[in-house]
Length: 484
Image 1 (cartoon, rainbow, N blue to C red):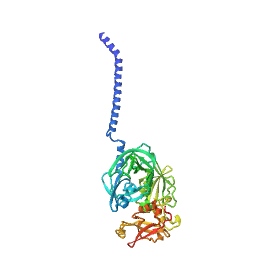
Image 2 (spheres, rainbow, N blue to C red; image 1 turned 120 degrees about the vertical axis):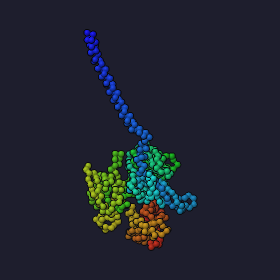
Image 3 (tube, helix red, strand yellow; image 1 turned 180 degrees about the vertical axis):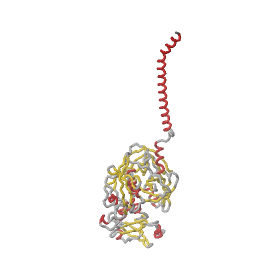
Image 4 (cartoon, rainbow, N blue to C red; image 1 turned 135 degrees about the vertical axis):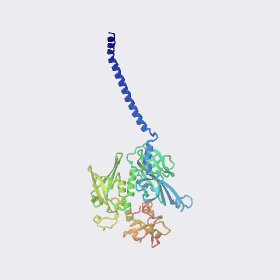
């Protein structure tokens, strides 16, 4: 009986013991779950804190720095370069910065960085050094393209947009400040749409103002977003001010760069594609407009509204990508254009033609008639010289250097003279070597553009010229009808 009484109370306590056990299990499960959450959170925190010093600015610089180059220049001084006495013949060292826009070595910088230089030396972030040459310049917009010959493809600067910049947004300047290569400074977008007049010959419009420190040598370098993408090209500072610098919006700059590296200018080919660019934080698109039906683009069937995605395997964001995809291609070469048309992907083949020839069906001229072919609606740089001076010019090859003698550094060979033009009326002939206009030497096409763009051109009219013919220097005056 005693054993029975002992067992019954035990039997009555079992439900309470089971309930307590279940509570303990539940608590243990909750603790285990909490530990798992804390462990996961700790793991994530450890990942984020792997390098707590790696801020967004550090990451942006890491992305952009390999496509920034340091530029060192040398030029021969003129009397204008010195306030006291004669400086003529003295060597002047200069500095600037550049941005790689094509892996084959095309680099954009400011015109004033390369203006009048005798030599250019470019240094990459890894210390590699190359000599560079000037490809093309635009004095009005203060932009230039130079070229190096790298042994392997260069890193291209990631493209951003200036269309959605915000006041107060963090930006970073990378450049050759005072010759200290790859200097990094940080600031904000202080203002947008600034118009700045530097002097009587140089005025900028629609600039980005920033308090990121910009110093001599930063010119031509990138203003970078926290995404590591270029949003501007540093161009000027406010003398006497503190932390007031300016940059050309990248959307504006890219339109000029597209012209400076156009396939017509560099490869002397013509495609005839008219486009408009759509840029926003959501992405970039290059949209075709109706081409001339007689152009290569028109003959290939490029249609208004086509979104150009790839050209010859190169991804297309804007007009710069289109032009650089065609650099180096030859007349008659077939190039595949991948386009989106009405939501469907299509491939269109464009056959490139000569840039300086218009077919007889275009306007009744013979097949060797020189015409403007760059943008169809805007005369090309070459045709402006043809229109104003009546000359078709080409930089003289090395074999012509003996013809200019020790007095000149080079010249422009006259390929053709338009009948009835100022050049024709003053006796300039095909084969002459143009070595000077007014007080400036003529070594490349940019020298001619400088004279024709000069704000005081009308005071040079008639424009004095110097040519070499049969090793003899001749001169005369070109009366320009439409001088500015």
